[in-house]
Length: 197
Ligand SMILES: [Zn+2]
Image (cartoon, rainbow, N blue to C red; front, top):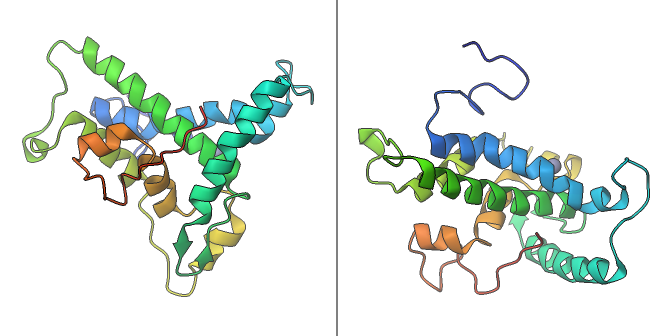
């Protein structure tokens, strides 16, 4: 089968990729895009696409409280080129956090239906399925930039820099901390974990 449409091709997707990889990479991206329907601008449009907010006042107030936690979390991240702007990147950060949660839960449900569990190749046998899921997502966002050009993604992109997209959302997941046995003092296992959806 030849896959050559948009993002539905390696390294993001292959029909014969391991399950943890499919859910961790394209599953996460699909979850991210779906979460945009309830992040930032998504909430301001009704079911027919008209600019008419459908959220109740109570839901909007609760949403704003949760948003503030995400803004503060990402405001604390820095790069060699400067600080991340938690307000500017909020909608994408919400989509990342909702996306990884949706992909992870879908993966766990899928695993329960696999009669023999995940078929992990010998070289990766030391990793658990959960670890492989998180590693797949992280690897898909590996990023390298030339010295002196670190500021470009910071000022031209509404996403957080790749390192903080990954560390930010994964440090909000108890399942990540459990998968990697993070101590309670580990940076990737903060006591206050943020979530919106
Ligand atoms: Zn997005």
